[in-house]
Image (cartoon, rainbow, N blue to C red; front, side, top):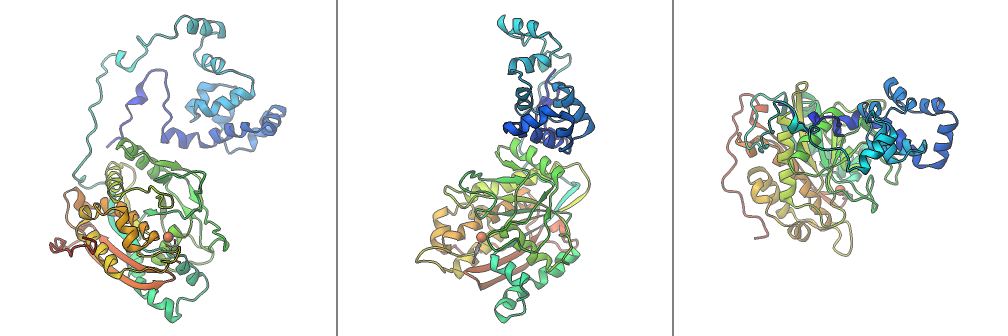
Length: 455
Ligand code: DHB
Ligand code: FE
């Protein structure tokens, strides 16, 4: 199921998409270095030596040395990045554009003065036999036997003190044992059902993103993500390996599905991502690696307005459509939703816990996710505390499940609730698509879901 890339055939044109961006990542970052005068000077003094500082392919280096912008573009360069290279060589945009046309500088300038290049004969629609692409439709049913099998969703709180308890060897202390006992089942299950990749939805806690940039939905498209230092020193856990090919595929599909994700290649990951991994995989050897790859998906819940539950759920559906379009290697994929449950970390109301509301949330997440999407932000914050808003993250994972695409209801493998861990109510749920549990035909989810506490 090829992704929709009709723009690839436009004559004399290279469109810079996630695939090209991956190919040209270092080349483009090399060009960005020319925004500093000292780098321009060093480059102009010894171009080959400066190029050696960058992990570029031979083709990319040759393209740069020859100032061959067409070749740079083929190798993943983008004109706005390459312009910094051109500027370093004293070229104007007109000289750069003209250099790619095979025309002399004077002829190109004259053409522009005379009204520019005519679109006639230069368009996709002018090519023999071209037919317009069918308008894309959003799938509402699942693909049968997709190579990327979406097996299970896992939900959990991600309290930083849980990570600290593991890192400091306190898990057997009575206070913490009560928390970790809720994950014994999960750790065994994870060993037997280790996925190839986890799409891990969480919220960044003013760690990778601060008041400078506030992206609503970020998809990590990088190779790896270092563990952040949140002020206590980085947790002694491995850095996280990404899955750039799958992430680029998801980005392409999800953005074409009307979700304007922010794509990030380099970011640190905080407790929102590492604590759930630790909870599910347990302690790792000091020089160990996480047992699978992870595509981080941080959601802004720091600065309002934050995305609605409905929007999160719809993003989950878009991610599932993307997975169903994957034609790469066979993959066992899990989606995790993390954060919550009820907690308030600020002000005179700090310490708020709402067990009844949390359990109503879990009930609805299992059996009535669409109904849950109607719960407004006010409800989360008023009932579950200001930081309880993290729970919207969970709806992304839920929206991706089979039953939202005409498939069977998920099987509830494991459910756990405990108060407290630090300031927070710990909630944890593992649910699997029926196909992920051979021979276990899913019971349809209970019809009589209790009404949420708020209505
Ligand atoms: C706590 C919980 C969180 O989810 C968080 O991000 C930070 C702190 C806590 O309970 O201490
Ligand atoms: Fe949190």
